[in-house]
Image (tube, rainbow, N blue to C red):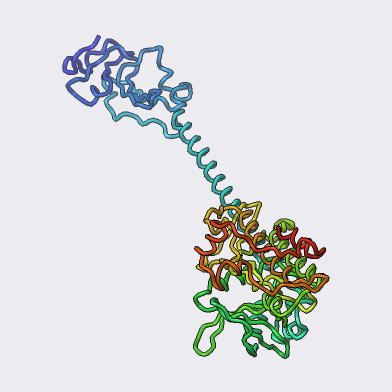
Length: 466
């Protein structure tokens, strides 16, 4: 039985065991004009209930005899779980106090689930972050192993005795112990300052080559113009590559940036070869068959070494595949023992197969147009394929072999005078368009001498060139 508040007071109790209590739900409990009363309660109660959706329900009312256990937290599962907070009292209209607060010791399932999900995502993101750091670390170590020039022992036979002794004199004892190609850095800096330039032995659009002396030893000093710094940097990088050392690759000593006569000069110091370039040698000398075989074999072996990638163990002592991109008789030097060495790597490209990484250094310089392959001249070459660069090298090699075989004397003493490839089609400094017209448009190739079809040595020349 419900009635308005004004109709009941403490004197309206039925007996000593029952009470009159406020009776309301939610908004009604906060509006004094809407609160009702209930009668016959064993105890009055004020409660807060949390529903499954997390919403709270406020109630005041009468507690019948069968529900007294709700007032005992130790026996009420709902109270223990935090879904119910109840305050009971035993007097008329005593349940008008402030609503109790739900226990903060417990969280509902949705809160627990949300916390677990957040924790899981946090762990996943943290593990992913660690994985990325690990991958970057591994790649950095591999790159360091690949590009470092500190992984191959010196062959001291390639260096003048004076240079070896001088490394100790300047406090650098790493010449015998360190790895890489070229002298130790401290040795390079001291060497460049002590070299005397003796005579100019070559000059071109990209710089000069001098014969220099250092403690009585001859060295070659290639001096780059400041505008060609990219070629100097690239050539230094290639010469410093691990495992590039080879009997058919020019021996490299040092690089340095120095100042002479208030002008910045870029020096690249290498072994000196008195016979000069293959171009000069062929102009001055006639070859016999033995020399011809030695020249051709050495050049081909050097190119093969460049083109071959050396994988090493865990990238230690590894060498990328290298394409020269400017093979010509002027970039090949003749040694005293009759072998040839490749030089001038300012345009070289490198390729690492495992990483599928092709590196073409930024360089405004272009190769020698006379020796450019047809696919370069017609601009149809695939610049993303390392094989394309290798094929262009082989085409240029064919032209160099043609130059060599022309200077090889037949059994009857017949020999042609030295001429560069396409001498009968273009001038001494052909343009790109001229070479494209001759090679791609007219489909011209160097003329094959008639004797190549009869002379044994020349037959080999003809088959090699064709």
